[in-house]
Image (cartoon, rainbow, N blue to C red; front, side, top):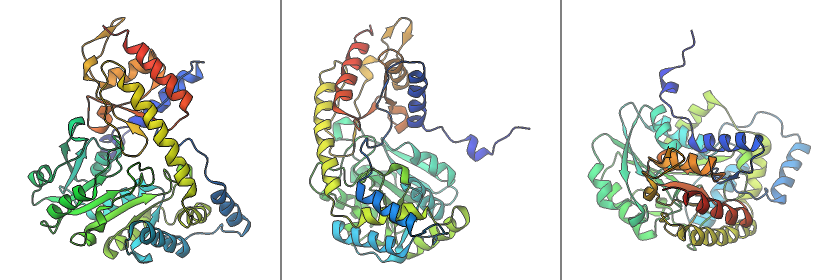
Length: 397
């Protein structure tokens, strides 16, 4: 009998991956598709990082690694947190995992019990609510929108806190909106969290270095909740190392110890060569990060300008990451050749099939009136994609 477990049956497929797969299927048929669905820098991993990996291979780093990571990698992460964020962590507070998603999954499984509530601002990254399901928790979604730059207010947060509230999930810079919380906004949220001793904060900072506001702000900086903040970060976005699969959590020792216990049974330590490459990245001077960030600023401006001129699209000016998240409800009820646009899923499929541009429906992020466009690709492709989108939606009547 073919029967998967109830926990797997309850999970949704990742729509970012699904849209990318559909675009590849069209490309295999000879159709020129511009893929704006995946959150992946189009830059190559820096040469000095690759050299560190080659050196590790030559030096025979081919044996099992410590569960939490090599000591030099843990120390490099502590150094990065002190140097860039003015945060003091020791190596026994860091656990390195197979990407930030793995780190996030570890933490949720270690701190959330069945029925615990996890507060998730919407729009949210696609995996948040699914990982909460796996931990047997309950997602409590706070809706935000374009008019407030997709950020929650302290009042919205306090209004949903109950005795069952266990975790607040924050992502800044945000996937999918690119919004960034300021120092004062984070302080106001921290002051609310401080009033509820059982409430933890998972701060997803994977887009830290793709920040156009000048300075990254972490909610872990506030002394009144510092021991209750778990930072999630890694090398995928800032160092163009998505395939190397290195993420980390930085937390109180009791949480780190629990994550080590879990990871020791599930996966053990992550790839030795990738760890040595990540150590080089975390110890670097940040020059390659700055070059990438400058390119993303240029692309952001190009895309926001182009999309803002398309009738029916409304967007904000993202402060970071590499996405725009336009509101597209103007097109609901319109049709072309018998295809009626009822929601963001329909518009996304229309843009793929008619415009040959792959985007992700906002429903994947808990915001069904929006779509997500990644601008992690070349300027030429972004210009062409905007032209195709404008031409396609003009057909809708």
